[in-house]
Length: 178
Image (cartoon, rainbow, N blue to C red; front, side, top):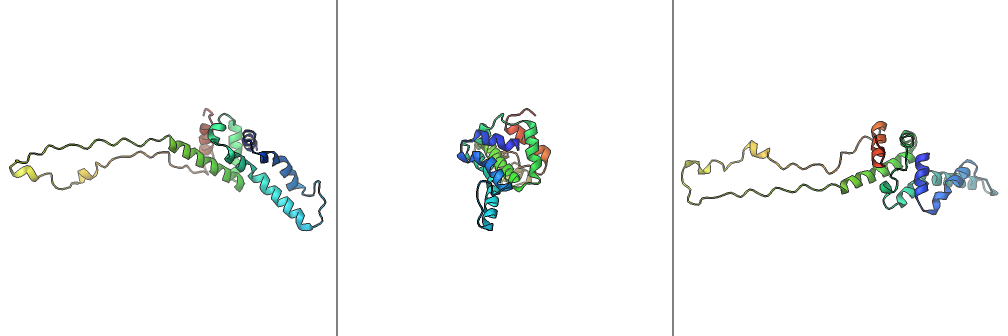
């Protein structure tokens, strides 16, 4: 959980301090309160569980530029542990998806569209005569192959189930040398 703790340490939202109290309340909902209604026990437990699981999402989303704000914050062990937990924890997987959305957005911002080539100017002789003045009028397959090539703005999204590739991409995004 070091990955999430480092996100919390960078965030300035007050709810970042709820992580430990929410963990206590989800494990022992009657801590510090007298439960007079059985359903209150479950409400406290389940609200605490939601808070505990989603506080890192709120803290990450509170950052203006989370990728830049978290540069150098993680170790490779932090990243690998986080990625491995994504296979079994839906809330952790959701945080990974949010982070990758930001990575792709940031990469797309750096993309510049290609500059189109200037159209070719043809010299036309209005007084041309002869049989071969009409030879290039039709389309041919060779002309169809000359379509303009445009590079994709960012790499195609990767398979987020490939934990090795995901770990490498996160490490690169957060400034680790891989």
